Image (cartoon, rainbow, N blue to C red):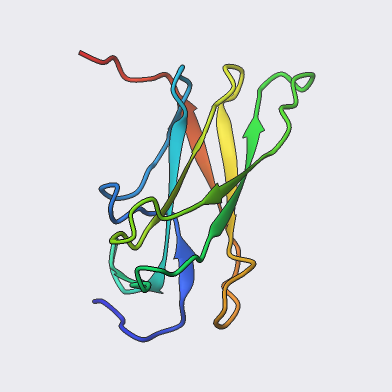
Length: 135
Protein backbone atom coordinates (compact mmCIF):
# COMPACT_ATOMS: atom_id res chain seq x y z
CA UNK A 1 0.00 0.00 0.00
CA UNK A 2 1.42 3.37 -0.99
CA UNK A 3 0.75 6.35 1.29
CA UNK A 4 0.50 9.64 -0.59
CA UNK A 5 0.75 13.01 1.17
CA UNK A 6 1.99 11.56 4.46
CA UNK A 7 4.90 12.70 6.62
CA UNK A 8 8.09 12.83 4.58
CA UNK A 9 11.22 10.92 5.55
CA UNK A 10 14.62 10.00 4.17
CA UNK A 11 15.14 6.53 2.75
CA UNK A 12 18.17 4.60 1.48
CA UNK A 13 16.96 4.09 -2.05
CA UNK A 14 17.65 5.55 -5.45
CA UNK A 15 14.72 5.59 -7.84
CA UNK A 16 16.88 6.58 -10.80
CA UNK A 17 19.69 4.23 -9.80
CA UNK A 18 17.53 1.14 -9.85
CA UNK A 19 16.50 0.52 -6.26
CA UNK A 20 18.46 0.50 -3.05
CA UNK A 21 21.98 -0.54 -2.29
CA UNK A 22 22.34 -3.31 0.27
CA UNK A 23 26.14 -3.27 0.47
CA UNK A 24 29.26 -1.23 -0.28
CA UNK A 25 32.21 -2.71 -2.17
CA UNK A 26 35.95 -2.48 -1.56
CA UNK A 27 37.15 -1.49 -5.01
CA UNK A 28 39.34 0.88 -6.98
CA UNK A 29 36.11 2.67 -7.94
CA UNK A 30 33.99 4.41 -5.29
CA UNK A 31 30.72 2.87 -4.11
CA UNK A 32 27.47 4.76 -4.61
CA UNK A 33 25.21 5.86 -1.78
CA UNK A 34 21.63 6.63 -2.83
CA UNK A 35 18.83 8.38 -0.97
CA UNK A 36 15.33 9.65 -1.60
CA UNK A 37 12.75 11.73 0.20
CA UNK A 38 9.19 10.50 0.37
CA UNK A 39 6.56 8.68 2.37
CA UNK A 40 6.97 5.01 3.31
CA UNK A 41 3.96 2.82 2.71
CA UNK A 42 2.92 -0.59 3.99
CA UNK A 43 4.78 -3.57 2.60
CA UNK A 44 8.35 -4.11 1.57
CA UNK A 45 9.60 -1.53 -0.93
CA UNK A 46 6.48 0.63 -0.97
CA UNK A 47 7.51 4.29 -1.02
CA UNK A 48 5.89 7.41 -2.51
CA UNK A 49 8.78 9.51 -3.84
CA UNK A 50 8.83 13.29 -3.40
CA UNK A 51 9.06 14.86 -6.85
CA UNK A 52 11.07 18.10 -6.72
CA UNK A 53 10.83 20.96 -9.15
CA UNK A 54 13.58 20.65 -11.83
CA UNK A 55 15.45 23.68 -10.43
CA UNK A 56 15.20 22.56 -6.76
CA UNK A 57 18.64 22.66 -5.08
CA UNK A 58 17.86 20.49 -2.05
CA UNK A 59 20.70 18.30 -0.81
CA UNK A 60 20.96 15.27 1.39
CA UNK A 61 24.07 14.78 3.52
CA UNK A 62 25.53 11.37 4.31
CA UNK A 63 28.08 10.69 7.03
CA UNK A 64 29.82 7.36 6.55
CA UNK A 65 31.66 5.75 9.45
CA UNK A 66 33.69 2.70 8.43
CA UNK A 67 34.07 -0.12 10.94
CA UNK A 68 37.24 -2.24 10.95
CA UNK A 69 37.87 -5.44 12.93
CA UNK A 70 41.30 -4.16 14.03
CA UNK A 71 40.66 -1.59 16.79
CA UNK A 72 43.98 0.10 15.95
CA UNK A 73 42.64 1.01 12.48
CA UNK A 74 40.06 3.80 12.82
CA UNK A 75 39.25 5.50 9.49
CA UNK A 76 37.93 9.05 9.78
CA UNK A 77 34.24 9.52 9.05
CA UNK A 78 33.52 10.66 5.49
CA UNK A 79 30.96 13.40 4.83
CA UNK A 80 29.21 13.37 1.46
CA UNK A 81 26.83 15.82 -0.14
CA UNK A 82 24.32 13.76 -2.11
CA UNK A 83 22.86 15.64 -5.06
CA UNK A 84 20.50 15.09 -7.95
CA UNK A 85 22.80 14.70 -10.95
CA UNK A 86 19.84 14.67 -13.31
CA UNK A 87 17.10 17.32 -12.79
CA UNK A 88 14.54 14.76 -13.99
CA UNK A 89 15.49 12.36 -11.18
CA UNK A 90 13.94 12.51 -7.72
CA UNK A 91 16.83 10.72 -5.96
CA UNK A 92 20.12 11.93 -4.51
CA UNK A 93 23.45 10.14 -5.00
CA UNK A 94 27.08 10.44 -3.99
CA UNK A 95 30.20 8.26 -4.05
CA UNK A 96 32.49 7.09 -1.29
CA UNK A 97 35.81 5.24 -1.45
CA UNK A 98 35.70 2.23 0.86
CA UNK A 99 38.92 1.53 2.84
CA UNK A 100 40.36 -1.95 2.28
CA UNK A 101 40.31 -2.67 6.04
CA UNK A 102 36.58 -1.96 6.47
CA UNK A 103 34.06 -4.74 7.08
CA UNK A 104 30.98 -2.55 7.70
CA UNK A 105 29.84 1.00 7.14
CA UNK A 106 27.40 2.95 9.30
CA UNK A 107 25.71 5.60 7.14
CA UNK A 108 23.59 8.46 8.52
CA UNK A 109 21.42 10.59 6.21
CA UNK A 110 20.31 14.14 7.07
CA UNK A 111 18.73 17.03 5.18
CA UNK A 112 19.77 20.08 7.24
CA UNK A 113 18.70 22.70 4.67
CA UNK A 114 15.28 21.13 4.00
CA UNK A 115 12.67 23.88 3.71
CA UNK A 116 9.63 21.90 4.93
CA UNK A 117 8.99 20.08 8.20
CA UNK A 118 12.23 18.74 9.61
CA UNK A 119 13.21 15.36 8.18
CA UNK A 120 14.48 13.01 10.90
CA UNK A 121 17.97 11.57 10.42
CA UNK A 122 18.12 7.91 9.43
CA UNK A 123 21.02 5.51 10.07
CA UNK A 124 21.72 2.11 8.57
CA UNK A 125 24.63 -0.35 8.63
CA UNK A 126 25.85 -1.77 5.34
CA UNK A 127 28.18 -4.75 4.94
CA UNK A 128 31.38 -4.11 3.02
CA UNK A 129 32.07 -6.81 0.43
CA UNK A 130 34.65 -7.68 -2.18
CA UNK A 131 33.82 -6.28 -5.60
CA UNK A 132 31.99 -8.52 -8.02
CA UNK A 133 34.12 -9.59 -10.95
CA UNK A 134 33.57 -7.59 -14.13
CA UNK A 135 33.39 -9.51 -17.38
